[in-house]
Image (cartoon, rainbow, N blue to C red):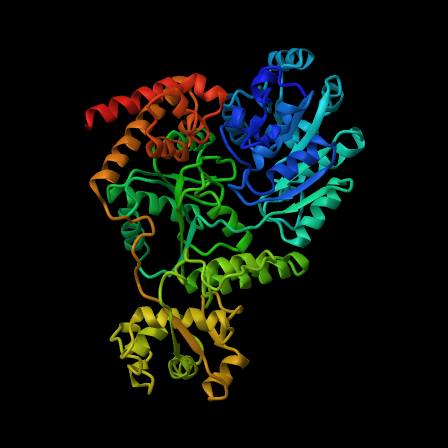
Length: 622
């Protein structure tokens, strides 16, 4: 084991006993380097497999601690760990975070110079480099393999491995070249990591990378700190504003389906007084980089973006993710919501969707050529619709998609499990809606059909004389919001479907819908209360107001240090570490070492600064 820059006597104490039990040397090293007292689930087993020269294939959720699984053995083992990562911004962030923990890390990418190669080569020769982050494009360059073979390679790590599978949702052709690793380096272990993969995609990844009897880990996909909520979209602007008013300036991401929607939503939020910026592929590289940097530096708390944003984001304190449109599949939804709460603290995931979203996504799929990919997209969209209109625990539904059984009926942390959902026989209401469709020849959209049911006096209704229909006004006993939910439910239950021959979203009655219309089948609707108290609301007392003020003081100090060092604030300390400081309120350096995330390097760099800030604050508040 190397530990050239972490003295062995500090990592492995001469008297390794506590309560007469031997101290695990890996736990001791974990405390010294990263400041943690225990491993997260599966981390120790993965690290042990790498240390024993075995290939690893780990499917672990975002926030599950994948990076530590290769950073830790990179410090322990002699030689270099080469990490393949997909995005330049992600690599830079990971290098900064590793260096803050005292790990010797560098990156080679498309902007690296000849001098960078020379400098890194010298570090490798002197055994003064633990981690080297590269892009798949760099690995596939003609000169890279001959060059890297000059050094001693401890192992390879491939992050975001789902990019290698054409059945995954972020397929990147350059990842296919990574299949050469096991051939070119037959005696070097390969550790592969991904946050999302069904069994089918996982088998494809393992086949593509030619893994050799790997140690396999399929961790739970459960993110217990995430609150899942789904609402029907009626007035998106008002819904977003009302939601953000409860967030108190927290960092968050709002996803929209198109560039136009991104721009409109960002502009609306700015007019409403929120500090928000747009991010999408139509902006210049310079603007996108500036927006992303401002978000990472906590200068802009809210980003409104297409799905082009987020894959390279390692920001730990994202407290909410909102989807303003229905994602095309559960894998995308899971990965995007997974960008919230990476520090393990509570975070909120809100999905707002309507039947217009379904029609738009189906139109995209219709444009695809017939074949396996089109059929897979259709199946995945149906799974997404079922989740959005599910009649059970959200967490249970997500985990079921990833073939994982959630053992409890109530997770206590989603909209279904924290509200009393009411089941209601909606057969008669469905018959009213289906009858309105039939009597208008199934030629009109849902908005117009709802106007008929409510007895609205619109020009369109008068033009087509739909006010003379028996169904005109038959649904006045219900609200517009109820009828929107009912049509969504009929879509998810396959009672109606979109007319694929029509340019506009017009529903048709299916064979299953006809059975309901003619009284041969019943329909049950789950009604949910409109609003809920924020899951983050707490009863304010003098003590927690004081704690919040101290937390804010430490955040300011963290930001000042980050600006001075040109790194991101969460690379100094995560919110979780700051909250631990607030909880412990250390009075000396010994107590400061009890803070989670306070490893050897950080205590040396920042321990006294934060300790003094805490002591000064507590003195002021006496």
